[in-house]
Length: 399
Image 1 (cartoon, helix red, strand yellow):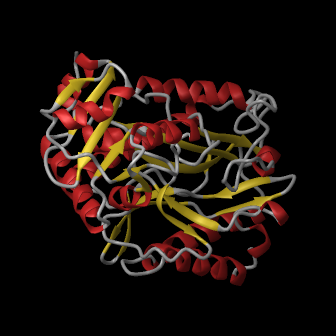
Image 2: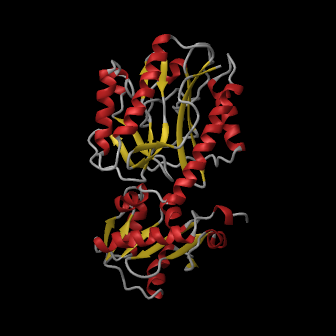
Image 3: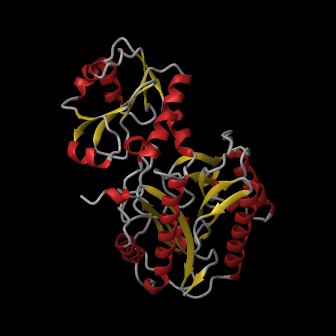
């Protein structure tokens, strides 16, 4: 099994577990049970079906339902044991020499209700507390190793964007172009999965939308939606044929070793109308100002407020991040193992930016009946502002 070169290093896992244990101690939680896939991967290096038992003090252990041998090969943890049934958890915790927990931390933001009641039944004397915020705050600040994985993903985003001009043809459908671009992404190693934490949110590579499709709203928390191939999907590429002189949005995610880079570029067959070119340039200029404004200590909500003020001053307020009642009130979001990580650059958020957070900044303008222009890049938060990972030009690529 060729996993060694992509495994999470032991020192990474150790550092993360220590940070989680410190959070447990601060909240006087005896033990955390981590089961959600991205959290499990973050703290153990594997997504095999398992429960990661993290005591406030002592050694964490990974109890694996399936597949035990693969989990043992993928994780750097030493305490890895098979778990026949979740009902065995209390016994296995006792056998590890840990006292019966009085306060147990679970990821209550994502844990299904049935599982919650199951754990309540397994530990009837314990108080169940939510540790999801603690975990998400830990995950929000990336290590140098994580930054390198995101940098690799961003370089692959650039390569996917660079392939679009050679694949784009007048009259082809959005979904045909999407299939060809996605095939290139797969060839480059995209796993085909983009993980999101918000219940009911899902994404397949991203959004590829041409002309008026770029202004079709949908349920996803995104300024763009698209018709999709049918109402059962209701987003991204559909069967509309691509014409000349219309904006073509390729807003795609690349995933490398689990880590995400989110990037959007505008393409066109022939030049766009001057007013669309000016609007796109306004979003590039806004991105530059946001890169200087978004520094450590600035509240994430203030970044959105600044962006909105700048868009309104430029005359694009009613089209910024949507149109009419479909407008969304954010200008970016954290990325990492999931597409919707902390911090959220949306209205009213008080979480302060910190050095080495990673955010996707996406100032876009939506014009009903015409389409979308704008930009998206993944950035590292530094002491002097936002540093972009991607290198593909931000300007409209005219084919």
